[in-house]
Length: 502
Image 1 (tube, helix red, strand yellow):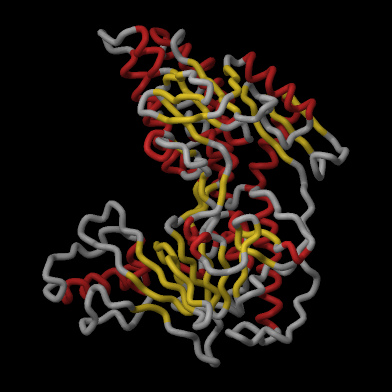
Image 2 (cartoon, helix red, strand yellow):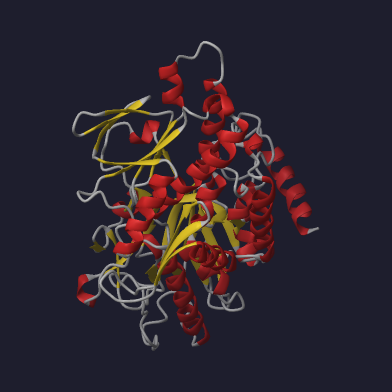
């Protein structure tokens, strides 16, 4: 098997270099490092551990190389559709999988298992695992040399005690920046230290762990009534789709599973949803009628809705701007996203903090660079508005850009600085297909309007819940994950959640 041969070869290489590094190195502390070490033939006994190596520029008789920064909706859709007969593909990301974010809240309470919402990059684009000149690198891009068509990266080795991060460069013919966005904290003290976000699989795992731990601790003799109420008070900050969906899942978990299996503490566990808008409106982008319906359903499920601005986050309580103290055992932060430090560091024109792009998703100030997803936004000169940070926007942009780059490659413009005179065709056009959100108790909202001001179909209730589940089941990337999701949903419906692993 090719991967086994590579494993043996790399293990021998590392073993031969151990004396040069002046310390022992355990071969392949992580399987993902296998792919990284494959990426350069320059990695030999003549190189020091901290020398910068990497992938050199492609030659005219080689396939052009597309480098994709990020493994989110935009980058993965692009990699899925890119023609690997035309291009070599290199993906650089600190995450080796795509997260199906609309279903992430369901994994927090055992409705779905984590593998149901994670799709490996190698399954989305097999070339990075099977082709000799296409790769996935577990790394962060720290800088981009636009003039020399090169990115500067550093490996991600958290948890691998025997390896230190090291730097490498990757030359590109076409660069696609799809690095996503970071959770907004608005500079509020203590958020990063004490709150849990809900953007990655490890966030959902941490929420599960805290839920189980707090349920267990609250049942121990000697715990005061006040401490029980604090441990079992789940606070969600942010009334957008993520915050509302998580609150709905959590309330379902409390009503159906905690009341049955944790009877000793069932009267202590509560959910509070804090929204900062002046009108105390959750789901502000949805139809007014749907927002009212969602508010009533969440309240009926036991979710307490509070309007307030968080001023400070402490280890066991948050303080609102009016001085109110809100004790918590679990704090989930979901207040939207903003530009990442990496995007802020790039010396290129911006659009509301995002990377500025034109109608063809190009970064017009530099050659052969494109940007898609949450990190990009239309420049003011295009006359278009910056699109919202939604999965459907990112996926649509990835699909469009893959088609555009395939066209460019077929016409001989795949290599660096070779696409100036190629007709790119029609510009990207986004049409909003609607918004959906589940609110628990087998109910959901479906808003099919193109915009908040437009007219269109709006649905709520069990029918919407069926539409929501059907739509997301069809959007899961692989049949493998479709089967996982379907089995999990049916198992939960018949037997309840597997809370023994929450």
